[in-house]
Image 1: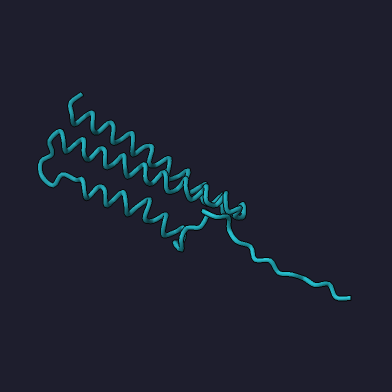
Image 2: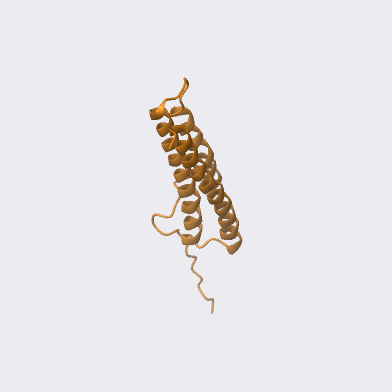
Length: 119
């Protein structure tokens, strides 16, 4: 008697796909390209006044927030997709390093803004 074996296709949970983009592309865009684009878009190309300092500080905070959100989102994506522990650990280490750097960046933006505005 032959046992019939059925093959089952495993599909990821709905809403857990990266829509065809690799994690490395999302990481580069979210951590590097978008914050740099914000920096260039809101930079003051002449002598900055108070409004320019505030605009540049907010752009720096927005870029840091996007970078942090990107890495946290990638770690959550790995956990939800039940990736191997090695992958989760690798993305978590990258996320911790980027969050550590970006928190320092946020602190620097606040200190620079206060210094330039004379408070």
